[in-house]
Length: 79
Image 1 (tube, rainbow, N blue to C red):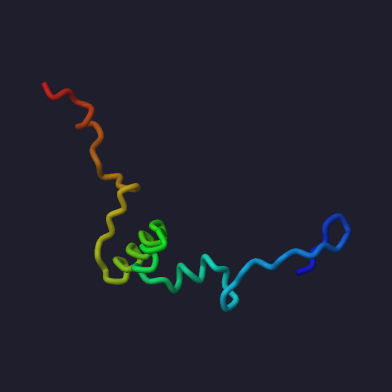
Image 2: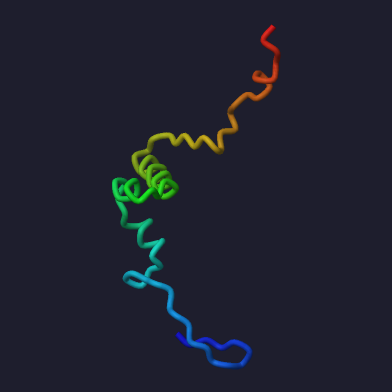
C-alpha cells in the first residue's frame, strides 16, 4: 500500500484481513466458545456469552456494572 508522508510516497504493508475484515473482527464474528477458550480470549468469550443471553431473552448479570448493591450496609460495624 502506498501512502504519502511529508509529500513523499512511502510503501507500507497492508494490515492483515480475512474476507475483507480485520482479523480481530473476523474472529469476534465467527469464533465459537471452545476456540475462544483454547486461545485464551476470555474478553471475547464474555462478550459472546452476553450476546447469547440477550438472544435467548435471559437477564444478564454483568458484575462490573451492578448498581443495585447497597454499599452502606457493608460499612456498618458488626457490633
